[in-house]
Length: 425
Ligand SMILES: Nc1ncnc2c1ncn2[C@@H]1O[C@H](COP(=O)(O)OP(=O)(O)O)[C@@H](O)[C@H]1O
Ligand SMILES: O=C(O)[C@@H](O)C(=O)COP(=O)(O)O
Image 1: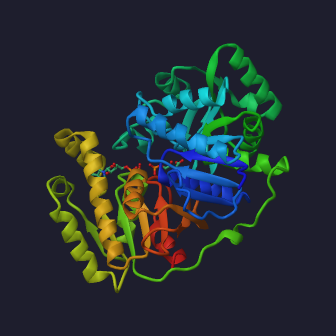
Image 2: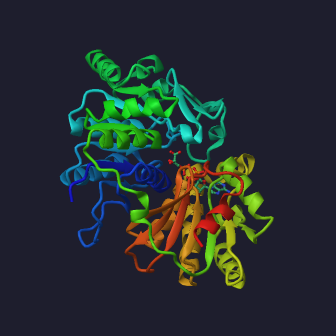
Image 3: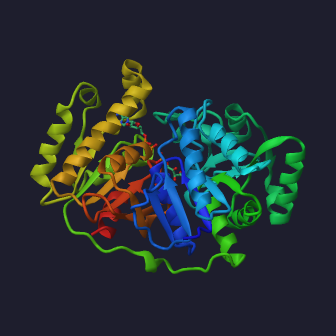
């Protein structure tokens, strides 16, 4: 297999979002969980998205895993590697976007790496280096209350400069609007001024096409699904890849009970749970009890087992920002995140042992913990449910065929869970 595009995603929902975009744009794409072993039979594809769970771990560990994935992708022919970050630039002053950028840049021998989290389909745009979530600057959006990486600064030139050893410049919208050549010229100028990264404005898909064409002149780029769209269109326009209809990679329908697990505390997910509660049973876990032992998870499984032959069930740890912050003050942010993720992963395993084969998970870190516990090695891309969230069909794994949807906490409208279940039926 010779890859036309290699991608490394810093979490699993982000990976499925990017893989969905690439498949929609006509690239034959699969999502792998980590670097696949040699035993895994992979179909012939144009792009592979290697999913890592490195957004919120120690920077040194994140760097090591990203570099290993980069080497694996390049050994399989990928000239260009995209590092997929969150469209809301989820990170802290310690990283991990900056440290990963620094190391992948050095490995690729690049001077100035283009960086843009813009994803206009979900309302993420960048202007004068400032990230907007819909009409709100990042620091006024619900991301200000994220349990693991609250975002308090919308100016990405500043945010990235705090995390990276490199100086960070800006390719502003007036340059992007002039097209790929103008972007390439600006990157060269930023390089000669000693910048190692360039936050790049983008508001419309046409901006992303110009950005994709410019980025393909380099060996590395960093961004969210909008950048993926630009790269895919650039590869097709250059004749490097032939456009494939997405139906060619649809998987088979899978029978069996369906369940939903939510560990995201994002506003969108809280609303989706409230809406679903009108039509299906919802078990709201007691996070305090989860912190104090295994019993809450066992009770959840018993609760689900009584219902799931008749109806899909939802099990959620999700809380509002005040409750999240109270719990974190008591037990510490990292400990809370870890324990709740692992509790939901254990519940997922129990559900699958009891026959669940259709599973929706809300939350990026939560999805990572669940998919790791289920030891699913890779996914084939199915139909798009909403922007950024596809149906995923398992490849390999000890539980046989499963369909999953890994929903970024912030994605989807209020009826997301019912919509997803209808598509996954
Ligand atoms: N009630 C809660 N209180 C505090 N933290 C929680 C609670 N429920 C879940 N969490 C943690 O919050 C984090 C949510 O992150 P994630 O799953 O990535 O969601 P999102 O996609 O919204 O970012 C996880 O680490 C999860 O374990
Ligand atoms: O780019 C995005 O917004 C998503 O693909 C993404 O990365 C999701 O992260 P979570 O919100 O943590 O699921």
